[in-house]
Image (cartoon, rainbow, N blue to C red; front, top):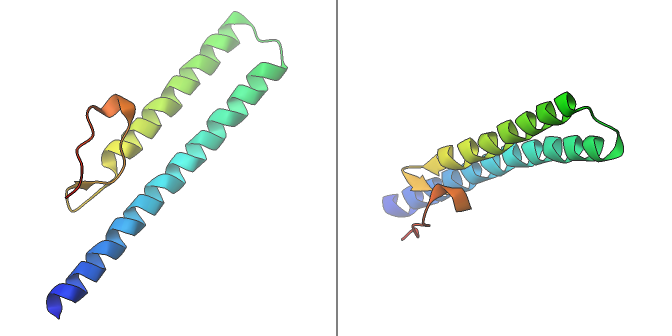
Length: 90
């Protein structure tokens, strides 16, 4: 019975960790979309375009960081194409 309770607790922690990470990624994606919409609607100087690209690069790095840190009890919960081969959870 104790094993069942522990498994239930661990499952809840896994789900919560994944939900939190996905919520953070959703926020970053919202910012990325806003920036891309703004950039497409107005004339931008080369400086502003460069700044927008640097900001977008920062957002991409932020998503990668969230993916890398989305672990619970050493189980990787999210994967990114840039993070290398996917290792299935057993």
